[in-house]
Length: 226
Ligand SMILES: Cc1cc2nc3c(=O)[nH]c(=O)nc-3n(C[C@H](O)[C@H](O)[C@H](O)COP(=O)(O)O)c2cc1C
Image 1 (cartoon, rainbow, N blue to C red):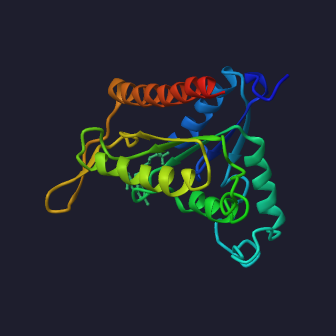
Image 2 (cartoon, rainbow, N blue to C red; image 1 turned 120 degrees about the vertical axis):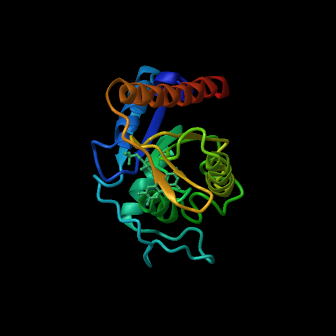
């Protein structure tokens, strides 16, 4: 089996949610199933379940004079999992137009100097990443366009491409709340009635459909790239 045989490819699915019954965890499980169906070996990294500590510490702080610094064993184990993956799919709830602290801390500590950046030939070169962010904002909310832009600037340009990834996509999944939310012109958060029954089923089915489309497009592009 060659390295580019689709059967040999590995997807690291990173989940950043504290509840296993969350929509985020559900979306991550579905993404993992689709990746497996497409022939990937899936390494599921549930940051909360594995007790990942997102706080930076002295052992994992970069030393700008030493890109060969030996970081903590925990961080080296995570680096290994990234190296073993051909693609990374990060699934998370959008918090303040960004990623939750636990996912940010994973990037801060693991995507470290000398490993993810700071080399003329980046070690993550050729890998691809899909960021699947679930957002409470409703699809038609004007805030969504800016959210998409800020996530792309931060996650794709600021992080993934800086670290040598060859491809990065932000899949923003709006309408992740059962009670529609928007902010009015005076800055008040308007929380609507909970969607129930068939309407709620349809809302979640639509989110599942959009998530599946992001994953399938990502997989299809991966086949072309490979
Ligand atoms: C701290 C915090 C910050 C949030 N910030 C945003 C935001 O900036 N934009 C947005 O659309 N939703 C925001 N939300 C709503 C979450 O994105 C939403 O609750 C989540 O995606 C629902 O998925 P879950 O049930 O898996 O948690 C925020 C929620 C929390 C708790």
